[in-house]
Image 1 (cartoon, rainbow, N blue to C red):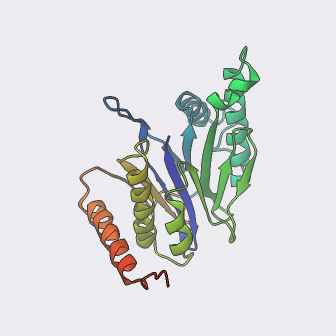
Image 2: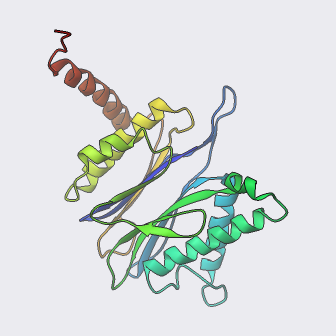
Length: 245
C-alpha cells in the first residue's frame, strides 16, 4: 500500500508521498513514488503513483524515456501543449501498460495490475492544474469543491485535510498539515511509512520551488507527531462530559 496527496493552493501546488512498498515482520521495502520533470520557466510536472509497483514503474519508465528526446520519442509530456493533454498522455500510458500485463490473463486478474496516479503541474500560459488518473486511463481534475486528491491508503489521513485545509494557507502550513495527515495514516497502517517525499510548485514559476525528503529521525516531524497526539488528548479532555441521565 502507499499514501500520496496532491493539493491545490492559491499559491500553487504541493505534493507529498510515502516510500513504503512492502511491510512485514522481517521484510520492509521502500521505493520512490514521486517523480518530477521540469523545463525551468516553461513547465513543471509531478506524478505520484500508487498500486502495483511493476505497473507504476513501467509507466514512469515509458514516460521518462519518451521525455528524454521529445523530437524523437512521441508522445512526450515535455511536448504536450497543456496539462490536460499531459493527463491524457499519462492515462493512455497507464492503460497501455495494464493492457500489456493483462495479455493472456483472465479479466478477473485486472485489479492485480491496477494503479492510480496523481498528476499536477503548470505549463507557461496556463494555470496550475491537478488530476487524478484511474487505472482505466480516465481522470478527473481538482476544483474549488475538490481541491486535493489522495491515492493509496486514504481513509486515515482524510479527516484532518477536510477540517483544516484552506486555499489561502502558506506552503509551510500545507506541509505541516500533510505531516499530520501522514502521521495519522502511518500510526494506523503498517503499510505506509517514512521517509516522505514532498515538492512544492509556486504559481507561474514553472519549476520546482522546493523538494526534500523527511527521514525517520527528522526532528520537526517528530515534534509535529508528538504535538498532535498531545493536542488531541487535550481537546478530548475539554469536551463536555457524557451523562447517562
